[in-house]
Image (cartoon, helix red, strand yellow):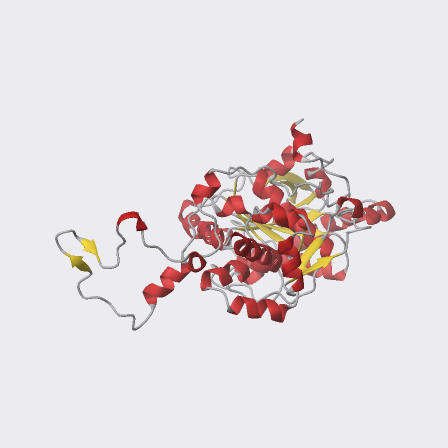
Length: 414
């Protein structure tokens, strides 16, 4: 059963994030064997066509061949679909989130950065949950609004604060006409989706490839600031809910300036936000509830995604284990039509023992594990600690933005 759950968790992470490294896969799933691409489990999944193994990320600042860094991606989607049809409802939802499998192209660097930031945020912030791009479309993020946004597109990652605030992360590696259109679309979505109902904010995180930094300097960063400032003036929002208050810009180096180091800015998701006037920006902490508060009457609805995400394999395992997952199969059984019901469920009125109740050493009657889903039990979580919550498992993972090696956990403690 452990190998089955590990495979389901890996497929769920790949379905949501697109591509993850072997070390990230091991951290998402709490399965150290996934860090070894030569393990039996990975070999079996690859031979079955369920996953693909990418070459080492040479030249992209994501790894080196000598460190054994490889990337996992979903394999043949038809094979994955056939597998999902053979799973229980809970297991299928854990992989797909109840959505069709993603068919868009995999962007290795972009996807790996998003997965790494998800792990770092889940490990170091006071956080509710994280949502990968497959579950972070504009329609998903505005579903509770009166007029949800339609069409395709969405951020690379969504971080959900404990009170339900959503911080959508747009990782920006390059600029062009598509980027300008994306910024304008975001400002339009914010203007049409009130904070009190959507809880939505957005951060543009500048993370150009190392070669682009050497060739063009900080041109990408300057362009992002300029385009965001222009779009905010085009879509200012209302006087009580200004778009400028819900958007920010930061760079990867501001949050992670050197290997092994995360700054206080990352701890609060500190960004620069426009104040509505040309070329004027102010500092803001997106993660600080005092600077980004939510009304009490909206928190219950916005927080529902936190417990719901505990049944999804795309959620890092230590966040899944904070909540009791919903037993989908039990809900389906309760709502089934035509299931025979015993008029008198008590077979022995003197003992008050319900029909079907176990006796003696048999223990309590419960659903089979595969109907409950692959979520780990809270008791198991209490016995384990997150030893490496930022995707660092031997062999060490290079810093995904700039190619520097992170040390092994035992070296960090020393």
